Length: 208
Image (cartoon, rainbow, N blue to C red; front, side, top):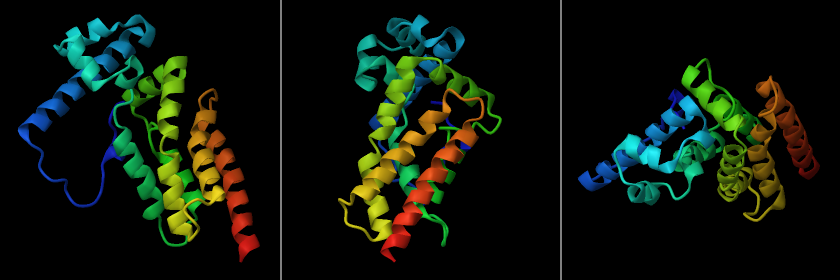
């Protein structure tokens, strides 16, 4: 996935990594960049694993050590994505509801908004028109449901296993997927979050 300015994390600088870790990270990045370049040029289904390995100057064995399946070559920043997702809830401005914070995150991250970035627009088009990538990307994204539900519970003072928190987390993560087939994805995501926020606020009012 192409990196954008929204990928920049805040907070203390990470501890320095060793030479071996830096080399592994550089190899992973070279493979992912080569794969994305080829996919954008020719289409996901038209590019083979061996071609990607050759373009990155690695063996296919090395490629599979970093990316166990072909789809993973396109989605290589899951840890960063979860960090930013949880921060959107924990670090929301005072007075902003949890659904509103999740709405803002959905509308300003790479899930929906390219903000004029041509490379990102091409990436989004690639995922949208490739069923295998759409399904894999959504499966990876929904893996964050448990972590998000836990943070929602913490921030709302609810039990860790509260089903309302799990439901909000799940549907907030599902919402951007509804935007894929539409020409106006921001409008679609807004409508989805209108429903989520109305339901969450009704729950909060009923317990007040």
